[in-house]
Length: 475
Ligand code: DC
Image (cartoon, rainbow, N blue to C red; front, side, top):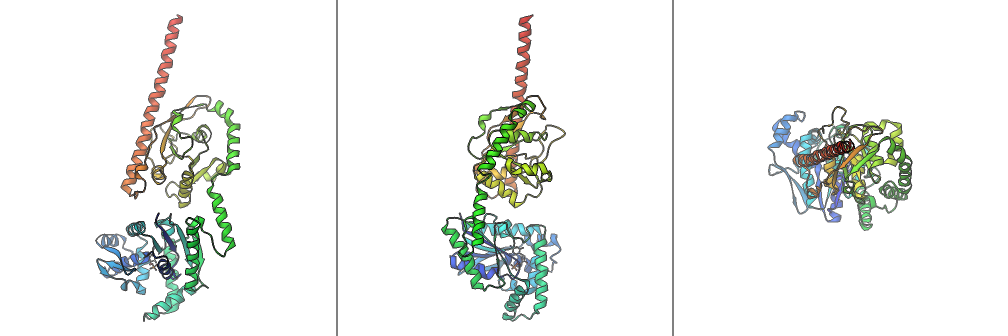
């Protein structure tokens, strides 16, 4: 795995200076991602296009070549092949860069380049969305801040040293406006990643800040891992953070699991009586390893089958709206429910799912994203299950329910052939590839439904015929 270090934070917190020092000390590449947005801003300025004219900016940039090159380890920003490293540093470019960076298509193009660089070389990247969006799995993440007056003072010194005339109060106002812009844009805004280490550099020198980060990185490397294994040299408080994190990673824990199986034992008879179920091809469900069960969702009782009827304790991915129910919230951890916003899944819920699978535990997902109240036809499905399978190598196992669960009547759960998507592991999930994978998952679900229908109908037919034969014999 590449060593990637993400440093995010507001303007003027010292990210680029520190990132540069860190990269130099570690002997790895430094990528200033802000420079890319600055190059895009310079191009729009030169073309006389306003940063708010999103369509015009997008079509202009589609015909523009933005690239980075390295000369003696120093990053050069190339705009249509021309070195613009100096030109993009002008103060007026900063606000335009912030405005241009709000346009999703611009970000997607820049992020693609950033990820490509990070994938092929050990690197320190600084920006606004590195730890949260560009490299959510970066080995080390920092969020560098400083008091706004101090940031304005530093920027003022930088600009006056270069001979630019400026007013410190105006600079502070500009920085505040940029902070607001960068933190409130809709797509990949500036925010601290949950697992980033926050450093306030207001009262620290550049050297002190760089030393602090280096100490985190090197001690984490020594203890054999990324951020979760990081151990701070001086700060005891942070050691507790480390302990807590380790504990969290163990999953449900012994007592919660025990409690779950106790409840499962208690509800066993009532469940069998009320919702008897037959699992066909149960053996297709792995006994020990991680897998992703994908299921159709016809009524709320399907949840009972996933929690109590299917073997093992499995995490159930449920829509965020269910978190409103106090009862479900109370049972969440015991049953392993992971809430997810279907339209805009948060990074935390995605991480929780990936961690669960990486621990070797199974999860259940209803990829249609909602209960199908009108028919038993499979609706369009969301891409999540396929993406999780590709990211973790866990197989997809379709488990389809025959009909809406009825009380006191036998319910059929049909386990389909596992779908192995591990061939896609490590590939970049472009929208085309994600579509391809999603189509495969849906096809596997449809196939399982067909098999299930044949199975149940065949069984009924046999039963009917047997009855007819026996009644013939008796007459
Ligand atoms: O770091 P900087 O000041 O050179 O960045 C200029 C602008 O680019 C910043 O205001 C927001 C944008 N930017 C971004 O949106 N995402 C990044 N990863 C880096 C910069």
